[in-house]
Amino acid sequence: MSDNQAARPLSGLLVLDFSQFLAGPFCALRLADMGARVIKIERPDGGDLCRRLYISNLELDGDSTLFHSINRNKQSFAVDLKNPNDFKLVKRLLAHADVLIQNFRPGVIERLGLGYEQIRAEYPRLVYASVTGYGNDGPWRDKPGQDLLAQSVSGLTWLSGNADQGPVPFGLSIADTLAGAYLTQGILACLVRRGISGQGGLVEVSLLEAILDFQFEVLTTHLNDGGQLPKRSQISNANAYLSAPYGLYRTADGFIALAMNSIPRLGELLACPELLTYTDPKTWFTNRDEIKRILTDQLATQTTAHWLHILEPAGIWCAEVMNWHQLLEHDAFKVLKMVQQVSRANGATLTTTRCPIRIDGSLLTSAVGSPAIGEHTASIIEEFQL
Image (cartoon, rainbow, N blue to C red; front, side, top):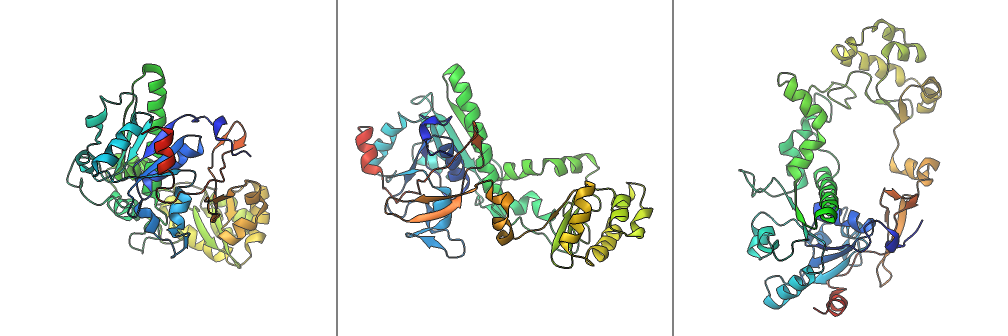
C-alpha cells in the first residue's frame, strides 16, 4: 500500500477542475487517485457549493464531510472568473493543463469565455470534459441537473420497491456517480487518442444519459417486448425482470438474500414440499408472487445462519443481509483495507474509503485531505509563474 503518486499511471497529468457538487468532482477524484494532479478552480467567496452540502449535518473544519470525501487529494486555486486579472491567471494556467472539467449549466461557461469552441484552437492538446443534467439541447436543457430529478424522469424509480408501492428512488446519488465514472472513461479514451494524434478533444456526459445507460438491460427488454412496463413483484421485489426466488427475505433473526436459483432444489433444501411442484422454469415468473409467499413463510421459521449452513454448501446463491455495523466487523471487509484516513495541513482528519482500483497489485491510497479555499493559490502562481 503506497501513497507514491509518481508511480501511478496518470502521474504527470494536470487536471483543472472547475466543477462543483458531485459528478465532476467525483471524476476529478478518480483521476487524482490514479496519479493526476488536480487543481480545483474555486470562487474566493465560498468556493465549491458542495462545501455547504451537508449529509446528516456532519461537518469537519468548516466544510461538509461530503466535500471532504469527494475532494481529497486535490489543491485549491481561488479566483473570480469575472475578474479580468483572475481570468488571465486561469488562461495562463490552462497552457499547462491536460484536462479541464466543468459542470456549469449549458451556456454559463461560454459566457465566462471558457467554452470549448472558444479555447480549443488556443489549447489544441487539451481534453475538455463537460457534465450537464440533460445535455445541451432539448426541452430539459435548462432543468436543474440534480440527482433525484434525473432519477425521477429516467424511469429508474419504478424498478425498486414492491408492486404496491409508488416510485422508489435509489438511496444514493447514483446519477451523479455514474456520470462522473463515465466522464472519467471518456477522458482516459481521449488521452489515449491524444497520445497517438497529439490532439485533445471534447468529452460530454449528462446525468440523464448516465442513468439511462445504467438501465441498459431492462430498457432494452422494454424496447423489444412490445413496450410492456416493468412489473414488480408484490413481495420481496429485487428486480422487476427476474423470476422467483430473486429477493430479500426475513428470517427468524434477520434477512437473507436469494439470487437466481432452482425452485424445486430450494424446496428440497428448505424442506418445503410446496415448492417441488414448480418444475417448469416459466412458472417461476408467472407464479412469482405465489412462490415468494411460500418462501417468505418458510424462511421466517429459522435463523439466517441456519439457512446459510444448509444453502451455501449446496451451491445456492445466497447471502446474509448485513447492516454497516455487521459489515465493518467482518473479516471479509477488513481484508480489503477499504478504509483510509486523510488529513488537511492543519491536522483536521477524516476517515473515508479508498479508491477501489488496484494498479500492479497496489492499493491507491493517499493521506492528503481536501483543500481549504484558495489554500494553494499563491504557491501555484509562483510555481507556474502566472
